[in-house]
Length: 172
Image (tube, rainbow, N blue to C red; front, side, top):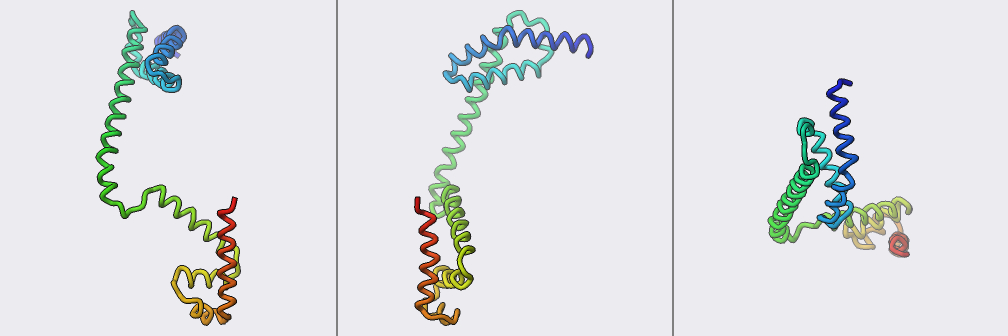
């Protein structure tokens, strides 16, 4: 490690050890949130490291740190305003497309389909086919019975078997 690198490292360590606690406290009071204060303090020192040359000859490190931290806070606020404006612009578009499901609705439907698939895998092939043909394909019980070569009463039992298993999924 060269003498210049060693000197820079010592300068950063000194700046951090002497001023990090103070900067964190200042940010905590200013932002009212210890987590955000810790994040901004970290980002401030990260920016200090990126501007190595600025470390040389800093006469008022606290003023320099508060200015850097304040600029980071302003940048964050600017990004948040932009995000809110973007969401405000999207809201009318989403309202105009009411027929489209929301991501939450899509997720709920996928979870329900996964549960139904698991139930259908757990029942006999005839019960599975009876359920699919009757509830998904819309066939009558008599048509399903004729296709499976069983009585309509047996188709009713197959359907009840699947529905009971589905009901147990929702039971606490």
